[in-house]
Image (tube, rainbow, N blue to C red):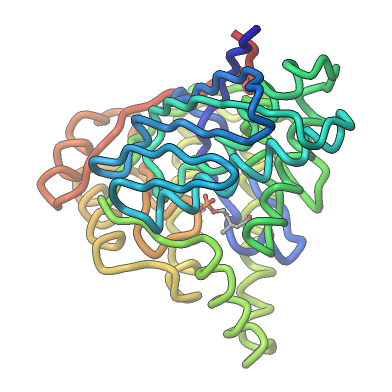
Length: 330
Ligand code: PMV
């Protein structure tokens, strides 16, 4: 018996980093997915095959006592630690420690791009392996287990990534609780810098700055939380679409400035953000942890011009759509 599950990538629209400090954030699932096949093996081991994880040229295969990496050891190891932890957690839930599980992963989501690839792979793995063991978990419960995986692997995590990947759509997230926001089509362009940041290291860096000067950083985090609440008001309002986009764009630009102030932007991220704005985007900001990874732009009238400007500035544009669907057993 084999089970196939898939889970989507996400973008954080507003509130990354401040969400780690209990402030609210807004995120949405997007239509890039990770697919995980799960089956039993009779070796009693965890075996993970990931042949097309988008770290250049990577082929990975490892089991409990053997580890083979053909390239990019660091990033591969990071992805695989989420998968391995997810399998171990489900085996515990199913009271089946020591039972051999093999998973095969294929993914459309670039790794380390701030698009939630680790959360998506954790959620899809939990979905597939729990089904394999006959556990009946809701998507919300799987999102919570995904959060546990993140805490075990990276130490600190708000849980927003696995939550939105498991349940899909648009969410407002605060301290582990989420609320679906009304679905709206967002004409966005995601721009990938081509390099990756480590969420773990960036969260730790912001924490060090916070501890060094809480009286400076706390007001920045509070302002980020207020931006999120304003964005929620705009999204749930009955303003016409043009006005909604204009207001969201301004809030994106404000949020980007504050993320830059926290030190999580890079030269390349800023270049893509400004290139998008100059090409006519009404808002552009980092999405995710920063330090590389991705930005996104809101471009209702000129998605293709903005995509071209991102290419010229040295990034890889992706015109994507919001995905209503979260974890799916295929
Ligand atoms: O996984 P990323 O790179 O999209 O970043 C997650 C967002 C952070 O707020 C930086 C961390 C968290 O746990 O919420």
